[in-house]
Structures are given as structure tokens and as C-alpha cells.
Length: 63
Image (cartoon, rainbow, N blue to C red; front, side, top):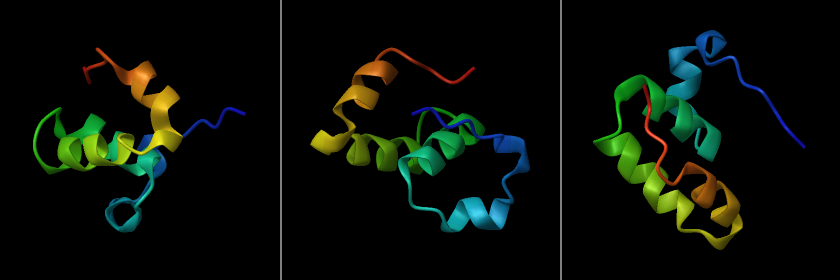
């Protein structure tokens, strides 16, 4: 199943409270590939449930 997220339509307050991996990806895209967003995403992707996403993101960098 594929879900698309229009990150431009997500309110900043909603994004700040969200705790999902998708929210971390949006924050990473907005903020840059370093700092707290990258650290939280890295920690979450260590979970075995996210192994395929971790592999998909290997080498990916926000533009």
C-alpha cells in the first residue's frame, strides 16, 4: 500500500506533535539532513519493522 503526503498542507503545529516515521521524513526534508530530525529518524529506522524503508533511504539526501 502506498500513501502520498502533501507536506505543504501539513500544519506546522500538527507536524511538531506527530511522532511517525513519515513525520520525521517531512521534518528532515524541511530542516536539512543533520541535527535533531536526522537523529530521530536514524533512531526510528533501527527498528526491524522499518528495515525496507531504511534500505530505500540509503544514500538518499534531501534536495
